[in-house]
Length: 300
Image (tube, rainbow, N blue to C red; front, side, top):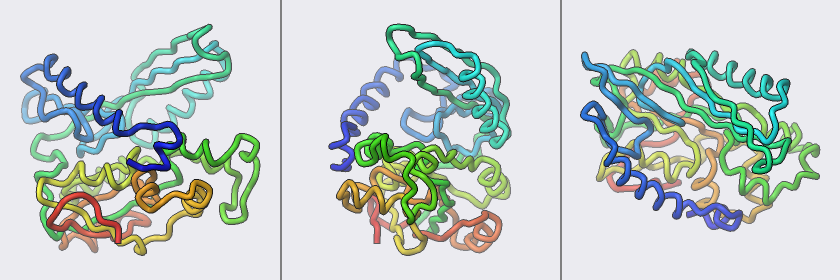
């Protein structure tokens, strides 16, 4: 676990233990149509005819997004504020090509402050069973292609909040070229259309969304037993916000790569023969490493 992240109050080891306990419980509420186990990038459910529904919160299963449902908890309902939040959700759904099918707004006076809100949601997609992305498709020598992020992607904020005070949000460090507030509020990039286009042409073996846990936790989720990943750190230029956080937190490389996306929001695993095609078609994509015998992630 990232020591810098631990010091900010986040215990990812406790979270991992909780997931293990949840997986054991979830096994008690199962239907025969469930495909796969808890812990992948999406939950899969057979609807017959070789088709699977994929339900996910940060998922990459090769499924086409169909619809999204949101849950918005607030201390006090302010109609204009709620509409502003939903406006952002609608834009995200539009970019992903899915419908906003519904949701819930819950008011919690006395539990949450009037000006606070908590937003969550999940997406459901559909995919042919034979086209599900995952470790089964990955082979030694496969290339790792990185798709650039738009910034922090809403991960590692607990650590960011310990090194950037609220009084500094309006400051624009020269290296960033924008204020801290603009940096942390930059919308997450939505990769669905371009990844789906590549997948439909059978160019992708697996894909790792670099969310909480950074490279060190997310890349191994798409690798089979006996295989690891070698990442060439110098293959891309890390956005300056990450160096700013590293300096302020006195963080190590393990801290940073185990917490943040470091400028790469999605990692595609592709065959050696498809590298050129993927690099040409995916805007800004970079070859950042390869699949190697072993385990885990090595940052060179």
